Length: 167
Image (cartoon, rainbow, N blue to C red; front, side, top):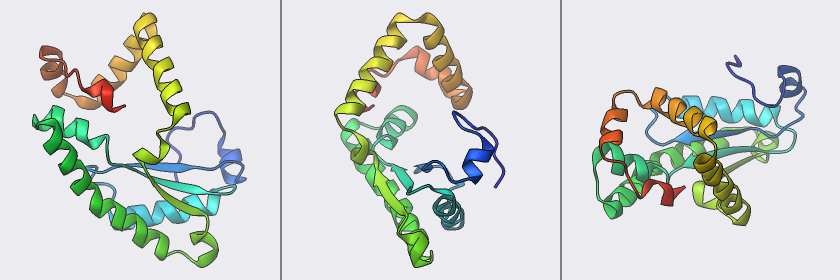
């Protein structure tokens, strides 16, 4: 495994299995094939202190469907859940392909599984800081803009009010 970017840890710590990694899987990212997810599951279970999580980012895909495809909210949500079905299956197959001792270390979770009171509190902090700290806002906007490419101009022309409600 090549480490492209390490945050809040070191390669030495990763190799020493001192943390519990996770993989957030965007349901429309074509890189996340059955083979890729199986490889990550094996790597994660091997390098986890206790557990490795495969996080299926399903509900957030609703926002992508609304923004990028201009779908109504209800249709965008239904489509996001349908789009995540193959990813869930890939994750289940990946876990099933592992030896029993590694299989026990892998958990498959969905976005709704991590939305709790702590998440809501942290979300509120981020939104408040976004509104009150121009440097933070600029950093996030530039980061997201760099990932979105040409779609940024469309979003600037007509901001989506419902996006914040999903997160």
